[in-house]
Image (tube, rainbow, N blue to C red; front, side, top):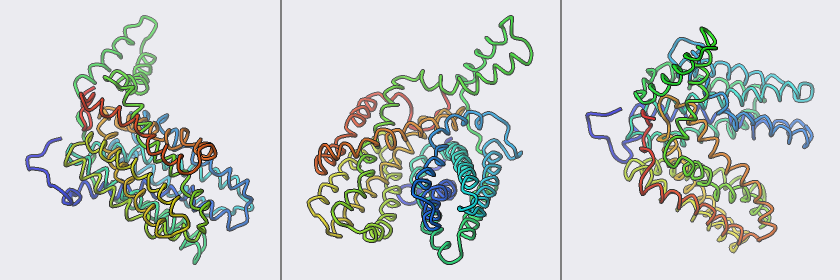
Length: 446
């Protein structure tokens, strides 16, 4: 897309109607997360469900890690509602999400634990599917110069959604019970429905090169002697749906370097974050102290970091902002070393939480903008789901050995290691910056 007027600068970026739309859709994305995570486990613990059973409920979040598997079908299949490809799928999924959330709220953990687990898994599946649509909608809705602000707004909205379904649901459950809490959260899903109804369907431009690649492939299949009629048409559709999005990505220059950059960019932050609470507890902090500091001083720096990260993308470009935010994110881990030396002192804890959340918010916004710029608009949902799944590898699989490293190295050396863990990804980024393999805006070309 292009604009006849010069784009706004600074905070005015976030006043554009489309960026505000993205903020509200970010709220919709973040809302269901705690309903299958911290709020759900709090409900189970409050009702006296065994720790072993509560631990098993971690599996209900599995759909988030595998959403790339069905994202091609959301890109290509006709939507259940005739409102356009993104809006039709989005609103249909959100209606189902409301019903599944109400279903969880109606369950009795003592008598219907397995049903509750099944419905919670359905909520996670629908939430992951909603993320596929909303991510694609955001990339296609915003103009090139808005992608940075859109990434920052997404981070802010997502965090606000998590607060609503986390702390908000707990407050409601304490006074009115768990059904009311989940019913209110189901009602908040209507925010996303209203936003999609009020917005026009994005009309991204698909490049002639992408269309020609698919035309050649389908023509090749149709020319095979043993393929005729419906069989050829079905195979052509499957090829365009399942093969073309991935072949488009892996035929780009330096695509493997991009993969390792995406995986490693937030690795150090993930390693440090996974050991933050164990560190605080080992230093003698109580759960109440940790919770109070995290809730009071935690959200605001994340929101500020996300907004500033988005502005940096708009001001200095995606790759430079990604590098700067990545360096600051890595340096933020040094505050854990400061915490180790400070010991059981709440002042150090406040500084540590502020620094980690602020730099993490900046890097998160820059990474969202970068991933958005790697998407071919012919396969937006598939590409973004694939790239965000790669980014999750560092947060989950690679960071899972952090406890073993702490035992071997000790706290100080471990956090020093996390400070340098992102260096390989940053060096890859510097190499890519010499000659970027793709524009830093959503790609109409292959």
